[in-house]
Amino acid sequence: MAIGPGGRSRTFAEINVTPLADVMIVLLVIAMVTVPALARGPVRTLPTSDAPRERRGPIEVSIAADGSVFLGAEALSVAGELLPRLRALLSEHGEGAMVVVKAEQRLRFAILEDVLRLCREAGAEELILATRARSPL
Image (cartoon, rainbow, N blue to C red; front, top):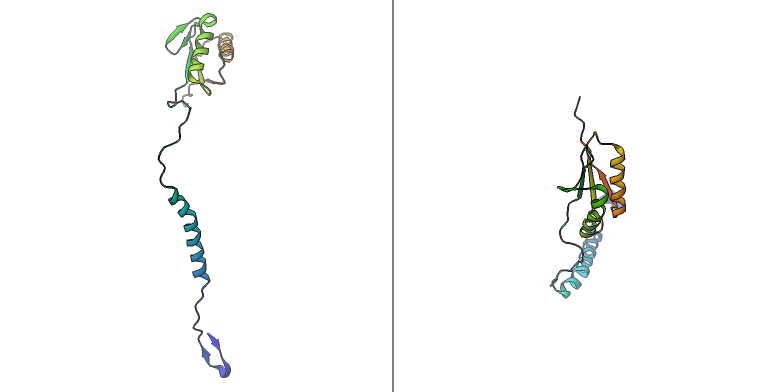
């Protein structure tokens, strides 16, 4: 309201078009983005990939307290069989394969060190030492 001459008030009968212009601009932008996508049509085929389709689990190497080594469930001799067998498994799994080493607590560290070295020589990029959670006191 505005106060005119003589103290009388009068009302303006004007429409504020700024919000209307904002809405129209947004609708115009949406139309500009969606019309070219609709003109191309739907996607007929999906892109293909050379990556392996199934994700394999980690390779497990277990070491018993007496020093015997297992690759999965198969018993191996450390120096003779672990290196070539692990190389073959790592090449099957491809890039980014993980090797999980599980060792018993009473194992001598020198044996664990030898197995870890052989895993590195075989080409394992990710080595994980499996641990057991401590029991609460």
